[in-house]
Length: 197
Ligand SMILES: *[C@@H]1O[C@H](CO)[C@@H](O)[C@H](O)[C@H]1NC(C)=O
Image (cartoon, rainbow, N blue to C red; front, side, top):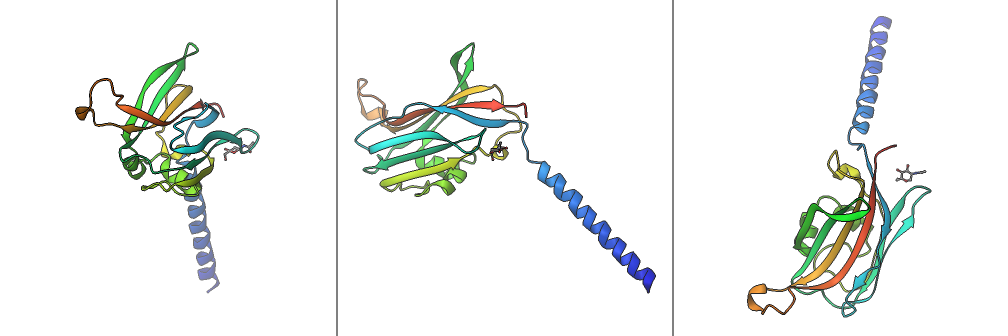
């Protein structure tokens, strides 16, 4: 009887230690060997027909980390054909050179298909990130890059991402001297990929 109980307790201990070991192994698995740190944001250029104002900036989260934030007041609906373009630039020899990563797509399709940032930003936004985009006051607070969503390795160190929302025109029905894109908003986000920590 006593022997059986000791055996039982030993088995429980064994199960518990297996659980604890596998739990800590799992917790370490998705960690990346790098951090993506925001260093600055350019002045926002925006079309005053659409916005009362548009601010994007960094806020201190703790001693070492800054978060991305924005606030804007949308005065009227975005045009039917609003596209988002994100271009990457890498700093090399103290000059920014265009990198390979370019994204250019319909804004609503982007909200539906992105797997890197939209879900996190949506949860930090007062009006979400879905189409149709409502007019009025929008804000997003304290966005930090979640590297678990990114590839296990990233190249380079100093990157700049230029983000543009623009109205895409149907080029077929227009003459050459009308621009194909009307910029709604543009700003640039500078990041550092930190590897030594
Ligand atoms: C600051 O916050 C980031 C993100 O949560 C964290 O990785 C880092 O360790 C924190 N730094 C300090 C000094 O608390």
